[in-house]
Structures are given as C-alpha cells and as structure tokens.
Amino acid sequence: MYYEVVSQCTQSLKLVEGWLDKAVKFADEKKLDVDTLLNGRLAPDMKPLIYQVQSACDYVKAAAAWLSGQTPPKHEDNEKTLEELRARIRKTVAFAESVSKAQYEGAEGRKISLSWAPGKILGGKDYLLQMTIPNVYFHIGMVYAVLRNAGVDVGKMDFLGTANFVDA
Amino acid sequence: MYYEVVSQCTQSLKLVEGWLDKAVKFADEKKLDVDTLLNGRLAPDMKPLIYQVQSACDYVKAAAAWLSGQTPPKHEDNEKTLEELRARIRKTVAFAESVSKAQYEGAEGRKISLSWAPGKILGGKDYLLQMTIPNVYFHIGMVYAVLRNAGVDVGKMDFLGTANFVDA
Picture 1 (spheres, each protein chain N blue to C red):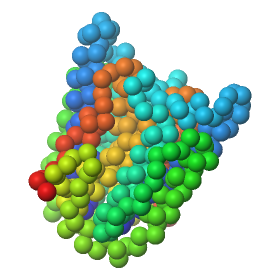
Picture 2: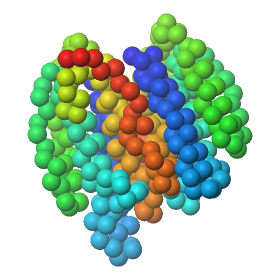
Picture 3: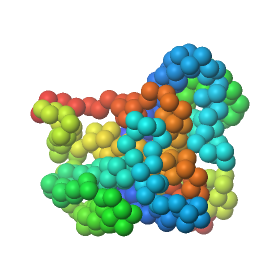
Picture 4: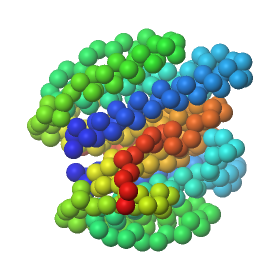
C-alpha cells in the first residue's frame, strides 16, 4: 500500500493548483495582489501559505524518495510568486509520479531519518503512517484554511477531488 | 494496511482532545465562554468547529465499520457542550479500537456506498484512500485551523502527536 498512499498524497497535492486558480480569480475580483494571499496565514506566528505549500511538497517528495530507496532531489525554498509556487508543485508531482510501484518493494524494511530528529530513525511503515500522511494533509489543510479564511471560494470538494465511484 | 491506516486516523482524532484542553485554557485566560470557540469557523459560510469534530468522528467510525464488514453504530449529531464533544470523540475511538486487525480481512473486496452518492459504490481501497484519509484529515485540520485562527496555542506537534522513533 506504500505506492497507493503516496499516490493519494500526490493527488491531493495536485489539487492545490486548482485552489490557486480560485485565489487568482478572487484577487482579480477584489483588485488585490495575489501575493497577499500567498503570504496569508491564520495567525501572526504561523508560517505563510507559500511555506505550507513548500512543506507539503517536501513531505510528498521525501516519502516517494525514501520509501523507494532514493535520496530526495533537492528543491530550494525560494518561491516568491504564484508561478514559482506552481512550478514547485509540478516538479514535486513529476518526481513522485516517476517512482513506480515496483520501486516501493521493501519499503516496510527501510529506516528513515529526519533532519530534525538526529540520531533517530523511523521504520518505513511508521514513516508512512505517522509522518507522511499527517504532515502532507496538515500542510495542504493549512493552505486550504488560509484561502478559505481570506474569502476564496474553495469548498470541501476542492479538497477531496474526484473518487473512483462506480455504479452500484 | 487497512487496520493500520484506520488506526492512524483514530490516533489523530484522539489528539483533538488535547487541542480542546488548550481551548479551555485559552478561554479561561481570556475570560470567554469556551462555546465561542466550539462554534468558531474560518468563514461565515463554513460549518462550525463542533460540526468538524462530528464529521471527523463519522469518517473514522464509518471506515472502521464498513471496512470490517459492519454497519456503523449510529451517533446523533446533537453535541452542544465541550463534554458532549469529548464524549463523541471517545465513543468513536472506542468503537474504532474495538475492531481487530483480523476483522479487516477482505477489506479490499468490500463495496461501500455513501449516503450522498446514491446508486454508486467505492471499492475498499478507493474508500480508504480517497474518502477516509482526506476526509478525516480535512475535518481535524479544520478543527485545528479554527483554534489556531482564534489564538489558541496549538502547534504542529499537537497535530502530529508522537511517532515511533527508535535509536539509529
């Protein structure tokens, strides 16, 4: 299920581009600079929307890499504009989608270390469940929340995307 | 991995109680009624925090039930107070934790229908990935976001909880 869970996180990350489309539309209507939204936050001591996107990207990228036995590609956190932020999402998605299901073979047995927890490791399963899922959804949730709070017309279906319903 | 993913969602839901503790502390300090926070939202057309908790609970409960071949227990959405909201979380967690790993046997082959998508079904895997994970994390993310936006001292580690780190 490693491939499937990372793919789901990747699908959810992709949806952020649609929310950014709505942010642009909102900024146009209100005659404000979309950068105001990209730098938005829910509280003064919270990191802004741009950071939330970068961080969501990093957790997707890291999961696709470490769980398939690769070192994640380096992506600098230097995005300032909407187009740069879109490009960050797209290169993250491209990397995650470049990893085949077969490459996740042995994911459970991998030991993953995190820069902020020196001397410690997480097993592959704990990393997927306790680190990847909550972090990816936390950060994309904060992107959504900042836009929703600013008045952008995003709704839950924008967060969920489409599901593979079939006729009963 | 069905058992493990639902368990992770359940662990994340449990953390909401700690956020509510922080909400109580904040309300005490500010001399305001905690109900103000329980009815908080990010936008006027968004459902309030109480609903977000109820909805997160329902997606956890439904996943534990349908994926183990059971009909979910009925929980009325009638919580108004903090203690009622805590009770809702606790009965949801108790139900989810009553389902053993063995009961998820055959989860992938199950067909799950949703009340808001009549005539349609989702396979077990799509239900877990496309419905359970994003919905649980969406709604608990909104609980967190409403509290964060109100000034409650919640931080990302409150959202993540503890991970099973071991020495490298």
